[in-house]
Image (cartoon, rainbow, N blue to C red; front, side, top):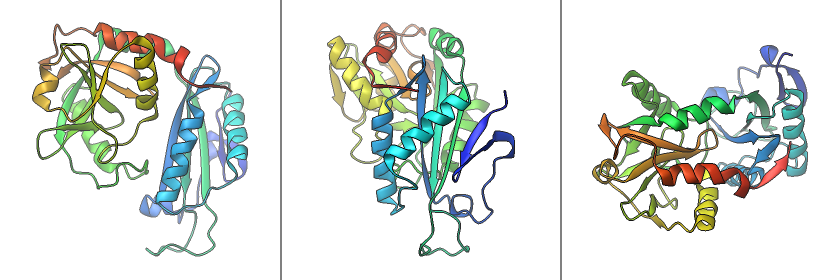
Length: 286
């Protein structure tokens, strides 16, 4: 069965889906997005994702394209039409179509695109068994990375640099040598004492939804979390390191800039978080 996309009020064949050439998402990256995991027939953490979508829209002064209740219905319909039991559902809202001017257009209806695709959970599980490698790159993004904007070119370049180095993710590092976050993930380490450490999300990183849910998971498992800065050097000397995102959950990191973390194998703390995540996360029937 061919994939189906929702584009501005219509369900269309994914291969034929399109937006106008003067959509401001295309012209200016004037839009925001969210990605939810679909696992075992449930949409994971949808409420928190839509709460963050609401915040991103408000920060950029973009109106909701429809009511929140209607959006939830469309999201479920796209998942159902694509028969996704395990995979991802993607939502993108832009300011809409208008003549190419920098100023916000008046009375322009926001544009909405929703897609869904299947992902084999066995592939992700296999990657978690082996762990991934990351590299570090200097921070070169705009200051408002707390907004989940579609303006992701620095992230694209960083992740391409990681691929060229044989790694799977890049960590942005600030001028003081402190780790910020990954190109599409939040960054974590586990100290020798077993505490989880991740950078505070008040400024300078995206408040990841999976990151937030991992706080709940850690609490259930009796693990301590420290929200503080950590350096590249501390990460390389850590007991464990991992990334988190809707597409990876908690994914072990076994090397940073070519230097092996601990014994070079996924750590037990990270794997325990990963194993417990689904049961503790909020789940909405797809």
